[in-house]
Length: 93
Image (cartoon, rainbow, N blue to C red; front, side, top):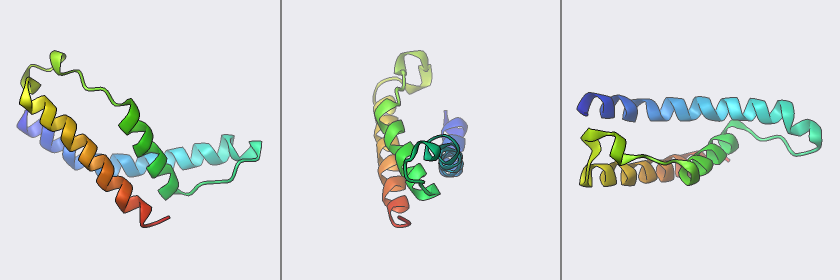
């Protein structure tokens, strides 16, 4: 659990930024032609974090290492990271 969790925590920020970049490009290509305002990377990261926060599901039952309190703590950390990423990205809007 230790190495996998550490790797996941290290990759959260770069993956979230990349996901925001991709979302901003897709928005520009497919939504802007419909007459909707273009969004920048910061807005896209914010939207991505918001959607992830509402749609993320972690199944504690399938991961034997994440039983009980450990799974609850990981869920809480995910919410805190989402909040922190949202606050940081909000500074660039």
